[in-house]
Length: 305
Length: 302
View 1 (spheres, rainbow over the protein chains, first blue to last red):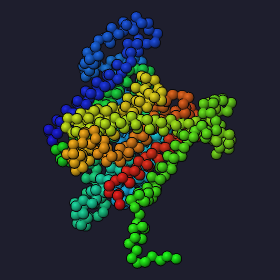
View 2 (view 1 turned 180 degrees about the vertical axis):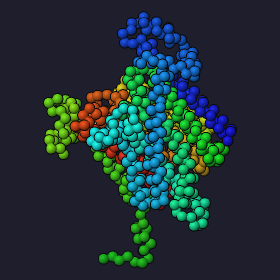
View 3 (view 1 turned 90 degrees about the vertical axis):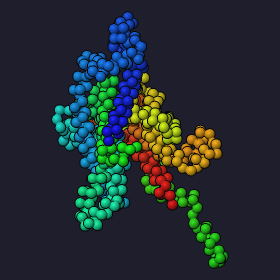
View 4 (view 1 turned 90 degrees about the horizontal axis):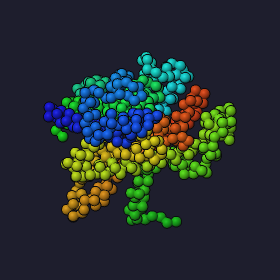
């Protein structure tokens, strides 16, 4: 297990390094940073002065390692738009996005696992078909459009929930549904497939032969084993949700990382954009690492590969 | 009146037993969700190709005097503008019809670009294995860890939003699923005897890859292609909705929804109509993809 963990950790660090090179290159090589810092009213001499003062005239490799060193010590530079420390801004918005991701994940799981279990226990019946139907429809709805429909229904017509903002728990209800429903079909299919496989396994037949109640067989014996791949998927899906939060947070003006990312892109605030790309990537890498380690711990066969 | 003699019953049997072609036709036409998907797709394709003939008005023609006319099922609707007009007085049906061209173009172009990249990466990783496999897996892992929407938005903002930029950005970002699936499928096929036979016969590597392996992983390729096409269409709509995709006045369905936000409360049809169109298109593509996967899965072959 230790060798496996060390290997996966090494790979994760390498991937994080590659991501840092790409996000540095993307925003540094393709735009004139000095001109962006100087602002629109700047003269050519001003831009030249800034280019030298900020060190943008040095070779890119030198700039990269300089930037990497500062990033690792937590210095992400100054926001061009807010004129504040990037690290402070980003960290102040992170909790909202993390809460949104976690609640969305819980919503997706609460919706999909019962449906997946029912579909597997009663295959090819109307329950199976209806849940499959919802899975197919769910994957076709554009999340931002679904979000607008929710707003129309629950805020404008029924007046149950606030349209936008992030002050109370009620502000998180619709964003979590809009972000979570998209992941539900994947969980449902995986639960269904896993349950079907496990339900035909020998140990389940033994449990049935012992005369255990059907509920005990399904929930105590089968679900526990079928849930393993779902746990790993949950970690990966949480990563996707953090990435997808940009669309949903913008629709609901939910004051998290995604909304900040959209604003910073619109304001050409590249230090903030870069920091968010990097942070979300590192979070995703950490989550997939966690999923792999969890899988390796629960299922020893994976470690050998 | 010819009666069939008993001795010819065998011939009759053979004539009544459907051949492989007939079996395939029966499976395809008997697959309800596949047929529904193909039906919706056919309608949207027709809309896109016959747009100049079908659209009752110029989709760009503005007239503030006739803005926000409701659709025909409303009391105040008129047959002149069956789906009403938007906030600038443009005919909504015409914009919807022309919008199908943009979604289909995005879907096919992004699928083609990302498909070629993903196929080359996946097939070489799966066939050669070893160091090449490790390198490809590393590249795919790195790509997967960067959030697509965010990177796409940032790059579109850098180069300016246009149809070409959106297609290129999404095409260069979305090859990961192609690479992963093709790699796995190639690994399975690679272990089969006929690949070893082709190698023993001295076939060149490109020949083995594209004449022996590619035809046998085609079903996986097609299924991923449909998934990716659907996902590219949704992504374009999301980018355009956020203002960093296709630019006005193009009638992209995502952009139409974005422009309609201001009139959400009193004119919800402006949001509902393009959203339903988008969902139907994506649903149809997914149904076709699922149908092809069902039909080509080995366990379903009669």
